[in-house]
Image (cartoon, rainbow, N blue to C red; front, top):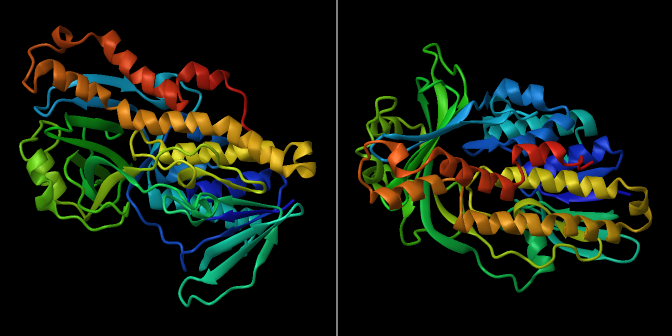
Length: 420
């Protein structure tokens, strides 16, 4: 059996490494002429790190990222609401890491080249069409830069890991609906800054109606002054400015600075911090309505191609990683060689509903629901004592609810069977 993987993002590269470990040949085809370490920060939650650890990647990720100790919530006046430990500091068997997305992709790509060989990833291959028969699939590509047809490639299975604007998805669902705008636009950036709080905390402040900010460090000791590279975002409700879902679009500070202008906390001067950013990106929060099926014969979808979701809860990358590992688990069964179509349907049966639940949860009850609850109870005014507003038990319940939906509640994750 040979698997053709469309897309060399986080999901596609994780799938390649998983298949290699299971002894299943595969090749990766990427539309970009070159793979560059782009993007901003990303979080690998314990359910994703369980899979990264199984692939032997934790040491490389630890060398690049920062192990998250805790997450803290504040209102827009800088008053502390709630703090909870994360990863191993919360008793998990696996850590949580904050890392630059480019570093994560580099770790994965380097591992693919080392383990599968330098020809395992073919760049400049834009998928045009895919045909299948009872015996296999044939993928047709064009050169991304010239548009010229490239030699067709045959395999046994094709997996579309080609992102939110997936060509594979459009082939399987030609009447697929448009991107759905959430009503929220976010601005993101990276700032080199002295560590705040304990240097390993993810911090939330504010709420969407007045502007919400999130900060977490992704690289340590980046200069002689001991500064970190800190990922940040600012978001609020606004009419759509660019509904394309292009997360690399340049942003302007004057479009969002008003939302955090008064956030001068004793642990971080937010206006000065965002003004010092190396760059700013603007991203309209978009997703797509969940599909009712991913697998059609020998073709299937994974990651954002299958279930694009709002970038909330640090879950897009995590769910793509879980997809890759679950799919590998089904393809590694002896029965898959005789009936790969059934293996793809079994993978879909395992993953479609859980990822649909996450997509819908990110619309309705995101992990920052704590901020919404405090905003509504206090009517956006300072409080005297947080315990008079909400109990610690209620705060913990709000946090636990999202963990359960996303699949990284501690006890459930520990009890879960291995995916491969």
